[in-house]
Image (cartoon, rainbow, N blue to C red; front, side):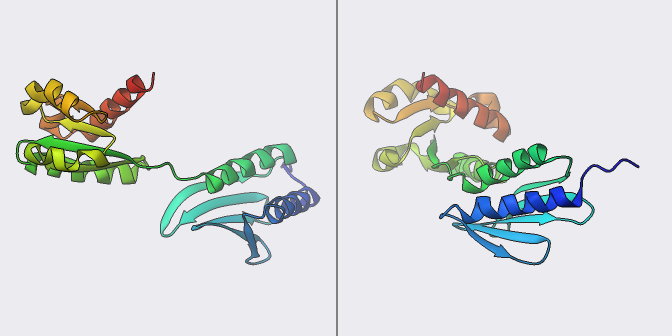
Length: 200
């Protein structure tokens, strides 16, 4: 059976990781056991494990949430350092600021349900959106806190009027087929298209 690694190479890699982490003042390194380093950054903890059989395991937790997981056979130093850099990029990645979106319908009930579904979808998929809902008669009291307002299909006729009144906040409408089915994926695609078009 072909040997993919040498024990000496693994030791060099482990020492390289140690010096990479300890030379960065933003990070704190803990030698958890003979195989494992824990790397702390803000409220995230990375776990770096080199198993005796030549398997390297990398994971990042934020509280109870797993943000990153990778395990791989150590083939060579170049291959392993590239994969370690991937983990570190994720560990040091600053959280994207939430893009605040407001859904609006006549009374706020149907959009309230949709907003709840969208927030769960965004949390599961690590998307930088936070969605609230309101009734149309409350819009003028709350609109300043939002980056985008999406109005229900039954209010489409008011889009131009609201766009003028609520400037500079962007006002658009929700497609009837998306609204009728509470299709979260289609809604996020719609939101991202609006944002992309606005930033052109």
